[in-house]
Each structure stands twice: as structure tokens, then as C-alpha cells.
Image 1: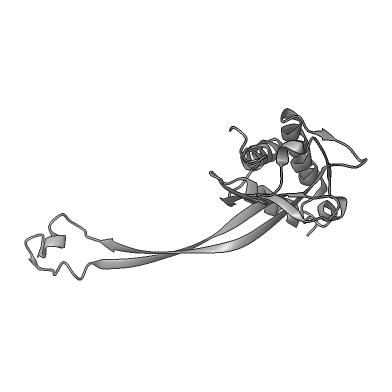
Image 2 (image 1 turned 90 degrees about the vertical axis):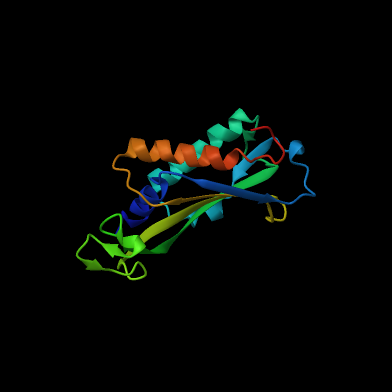
Length: 185
């Protein structure tokens, strides 16, 4: 049970693709911000294990540093928070099997008539775990959300810590590519 949050994130981060979206308060001038800190009470509530959480925070620090931000504990201009969510995705596929070329046209291999509207049908039901990583930017005085980026992907499997850290870096970089709003990508 101790490793369950870690396994959930490993599975979440191991997807083959990531969809990113972001939203922000358009009345905020993001060019004014150059210092940040993490929202400790928000980070502590995260369901991630300590090692993975640190990998996410380190990736955020590295990305923000490349954008000219400095981490400070004294009067930061923005606060950064993270959290994750997972949910089951149900996929139902109906497959129509036409055993030879002529059956869709109503002919069956010369041995009789098979109407094309009655093919063999199989239904496949699969479930996959979809995970989301949220990165929030907040106003430190009001603790209101001013920017949010979300990375969404299907669960896979990463079997080493090095692979997890690489995927964490990819997710964070993809999400923060949209921050600050209007910046060149």
C-alpha cells in the first residue's frame, strides 16, 4: 500500500502521448513576475510519493529557471502548486468480421448466400487508466488561481526510476511550454 501512489504516477506518466491544455486570468500581466515559491500546503497534500514528487518539483524548478524565474522564500511573486488525478476510461469497439472479400457483397465463397448485413460481430471492451498532472500558478496574497496547465495521458508502465524521471521532465516541459501566456514556444 505504501507504493500505491508511486505506481499510480509511474503508470500515469508512462503514456505514449500527452495532451496539454492551459487557461489563465487575462487581466494578469505575467511579464511582471520573476520570483516564485511552491505552495507548501498544496504540495504536501499531493498523493505522489516523496521521490516522484521531488522529481516533479525539480523539473518545474529547472523549467522556470530557463525562463528567468528565481525561487525565493521571501515575498515570491507567484506560488506554484501541483496535483494529479486518475480515472478509468472505458472503450467499447464493435468489430464486423467479413471472412472473405465477397461476403460484404452478399456472396459466400460459392457455397451459399450470406447477406452482407449480417456479418460476424465481436465486441471488445477495454479499460485504461487516464491520468492528469496539473500545474497551478497562484497569486501569493490571495492564493487565487491565475494560470493552470494540465497534461493528460493514458496509463502505461515505466519500470525504472530513470524512466519515470524522464517522463516527468517531458510532462512538465510540455505543460509549462504554455507559460507564461503569449510566450514563444
